[in-house]
Image (tube, rainbow, N blue to C red; front, side):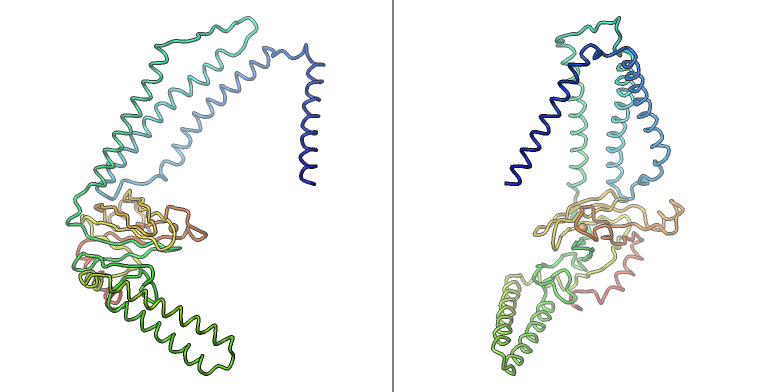
Length: 377
Ligand SMILES: [Cu+2]
C-alpha cells in the first residue's frame, strides 16, 4: 500500500513540475527566441571543446607514451605489434582528420539571424561513399587481424616444450612435462596435500588413499569409544562420505591409462616459470575454480583458463630476462604472468615470476626442482 502511495505521489509531483514549465513558457512566449549572442557563445564553446580534445590527445602522447610496453620479447609479438600500430595509426588519422572538421564546421555555420540553412534531402553518391569507405576499411582491418591470429594459433608444436599453467583463486602453478614431454592426467578430486594440481599417478593415489584410511580409522575408534548417540551418528556419516570419496578416487585411477600414469610421474610442479630462450613453448592452461586469464604482456600472450577444459597457446621467447634488464636499464625488471580476468578480491596480486634464460641455465634450474616431481610428492 505504501509503495502504491509513493508511486502516486511521484506521478503527481512530476505532473505538477510539467505544469509549472507549461505556465512559465506561456508567460515568456515572446522572449523565447535564440539570439545571435547565445549562438556565438555556443559556437565558440564547441570550437574550444574541439581544440581541447586535440591538445589533450597530444598531451597524453607526450606524457604517457613511455609507459606503454617496450618491444615484444617473443617471435609472434612482432606481428601483434604491427597489427596494433596499424589499427592505432588509422584511428589516430581519422581522429585528427574528423575532429577539426566536426567542431570547425559547427563553429563556422553557427546560427545567425541573417543566414538561412539550406538542406539536401538525399544524395546517392554521398550515401554510397560514406557507407563504402568504412566498410572496405573495416573489412581490410578484420582480414588482416584474422590472418595474423591464424598464423599465431596454427603453429607447428610437435617440437615444443609442453608446460601446463594452472590457475586458481589466487595464484599460478606451472607443471613441466618432464623428460617424456608428456603431461599426465589430472582431476580436481585428486587435489590434496602437496598435489595442488590434482595429478593422477600411482603415488598421489596412494598418498590420498592413505590419508583417507587414516581419517576413517580415527573416526571409527572415536565412534567405538563414544557414548553419545548424536556424536556417533555424525561421525558415521563422515565415515560414509570418506568411503565414497575413496571409491571415486579409485575409479579415476582405474580409468587412467598406464601410459598416462607413467607420463605423470616425471612431471614437475613449480611456483616460478622458467623458459629457455629461442625454444618454442606450448602452454596448456587449466583452472581449478573459475575463469582466469593468463596474461604475459611482454610476450604478447593471453589466453583464458576455463574450468573443465584445456586451452593452449604456443610461442617462442626471444629475449632473456638479463638482456631485457640491460635494454631497459632496470636491474629490478622481471617478466611476469598476470591474471587478466577480475576473479575475486585478491585478483590484483595473482601473478607469477617468469624467467627467460639460456638453455644451460634452464637445465640447471630444472635439476634443482627434483623434490617437486610428482613421483616425489
Ligand atoms: Cu584470476
